[in-house]
Amino acid sequence: MIEIAVGLIALFMSSQVFAQKISFEAGSYSLTAEPPSGSTSGNVKVRTFGVYSLSANFSLAPQIQLGVGYSVFFSKVLSGDMGFGPDFSLNYYYLGIAAPLGYSDQSASYRESEFFRPYVGMSFHQRQFQSIQSSYSGFGVVAGAEIQADRTWSYRFGVRSQALKGPSNTNMSYIDFLLGLQMGFQ
Image (cartoon, rainbow, N blue to C red; front, side, top):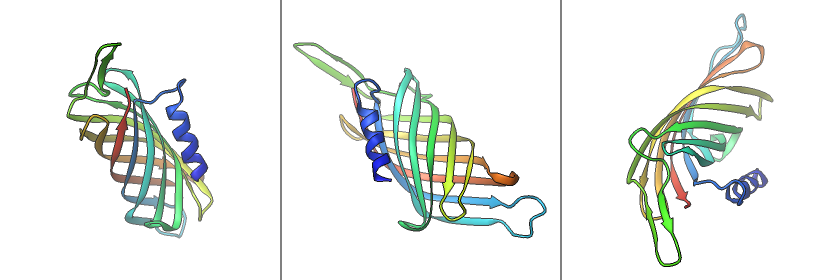
């Protein structure tokens, strides 16, 4: 697990693939899994604190960023049953630009970031569950905002809603509420 996080950070910060922002977020989640039709077992519902996400954003256009990340969640904050998987999103910053603007030469440098940057987007997620040894994947929607704290750091909060499909036509709805810190690069 640690190896994956270190590898992602190294990839995001390499000169070939340089991210404009790296975020760490934590929060709560709610999931409801439905068994296959005809099954005698009932729905599984879990609502708790214990989701953690590391992600990076890459600018595709001034108002559009690609988010690439990895999430881990636990049934008991940092223990119990565990789930994990990659996250991909395409975010649209509808009130302004997504990344800082900057200029630098030998005698001067300038950097400007918008204070409040709300966004909406579409996403794709995969979730692997440790206890049941099965995988779910599907699409979702994201919404949130970034609030600039200083030249480098900003606060980030968001909601991700996912509709996931698993083996034997099982369905799962998953929503998480995240708060975190984000480091911006120019």
